[in-house]
Image (cartoon, rainbow, N blue to C red):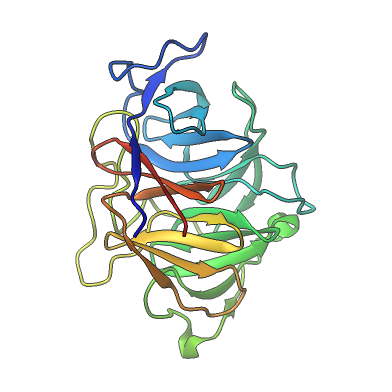
Length: 271
C-alpha cells in the first residue's frame, strides 16, 4: 500500500493567515466531513463551523470562515445542469444545502433532500452519491435535486441491501434522524473527541464518509479503504488497504486526504 504522508493541521480565525505552527489554536470540536474544491480543502466541524485551508503538503493553518450544520460535504468537478460548482452539505435532518466555494462567509441555500440516514456525500459523473447508516448507496442527477427521486444502487460496503441485488427507486423520505452509526467521525482539527459516540455494535460497520475522484467512489469501513466505480448499478467494492486510522476522506489531484482520532491530516496516492 502507498505510504501516507502526514501533515498536522493547524487553524486560525478570519483575518490574515498567521505563520503555520503546531501551536496554532484549532477550532472547537471535531470534524464531520472534508471536501476539496478549487484548490481548497473545506471541513465541516462538529461545533457548527466551516473551515478551510489550501490543498498542500505543507503544514498550513486552517481558517474558520462560516457556520454550517452539515455532517457530509460534496463538490462537483464538472458541469451538471444544477447549481454552479460549489459546496453541497447535508444537514442532520437530511436537507441538502449549497454555497459558493469562496474562502469567506456565503449564504447556504436549500436545494434538495438526501436519503434518510445519509452519513456521507460525494459528487461525480454529474450526480450526487449518498451513503446511509443503513449501509445503502444512492445516486441522483444533480440537475434533478428538487425531485428528491433518489435511486439505490447497492451497498455502501459489504453485501447489497437491495432485495435480489437490484436497484430500488423512490423519493428520499423523512429526516436523517441524527449522525452516523458506524465508525466514529473523528476530528482533523480540534479536540480528539468522538461526536458520533463510537461505532455501532454488531459485525457490520457501515461507512460514514464518502469521496469521489476520477470516476470512482471511496469510503472507509472497519479501518479499510474501499473503492468502486461510479457505475449506476450494483458494483463490488474493492479493498485499497488499511485506512491507517483515517475515518474521514476527501480526494484531490490523484490523492486521498484523510484524518482520524489523532487529529493528523494525511494524504496518500490512489495508486
